[in-house]
Length: 269
Ligand SMILES: Nc1ncnc2c1ncn2[C@@H]1O[C@H](COP(=O)(O)OP(=O)(O)OP(=O)(O)O)[C@@H](O)[C@H]1O
Ligand SMILES: [Mg+2]
Image 1: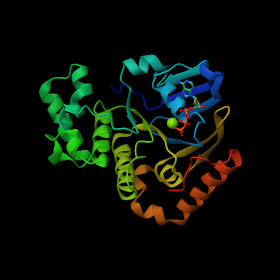
Image 2: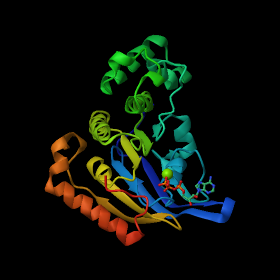
Image 3: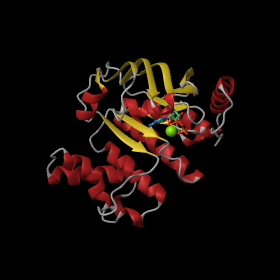
């Protein structure tokens, strides 16, 4: 759960490197990054620059080969065991034999939360993602965008202080995607969760983030970090997408990407 003192940084990576023995690939080299409590940080960069690898290291799904990594001042392993973060990846990854509400309740069930408390929490989360009427449906009866919202609700079930998201909206149509971005932004304002968010979309990164981390490949490293200065999540409305300041930030990120390496695999959507 979230025991957290707001002054503790969500993620501190110091000189983090990752070499995969298979093919001797240096996926990451010398990565220094601090994600503050409640901060929204996006990782953007060409395909193969190590974005997913960095997220996997933070989630303790893999271990760095050099450097140190802490999550809320603990080892990544301890933070995983303590359930300090929720994860949402590109595929919703719902269990098809469980109803929508049973999917959301799964992490709570695994951690021994009682039935009444689970029901109450899943009802709150369904309302938050606007799917109250779908509680008793099964995932394959929902659209991809709805499934993705369920996955996000599940990631939020234990009130994590950190969300790790790897292209969570990659498979959605543009309209749904923008709606989801707005919803995520509202959720962050409401819960105060920090987010590390991987995307290939420059406007998506700009709309959501306090800071955008631009990465370059071979070896994967941080090229530059840009502050968005577009106000807090609660101040960001749909109208921001048509704001001059927004376009200026989109241009700044695009230019940073092009300075690093050819922006292959990064789109302007
Ligand atoms: N398990 C693995 N074994 C060997 N090499 C790997 C492994 N996982 C990733 N790599 C390599 O590490 C590098 C970084 O991969 P990663 O998946 O982190 O990139 P990415 O930035 O997420 O790319 P994309 O935008 O395409 O998702 C790539 O060269 C990839 O081939
Ligand atoms: Mg990836």
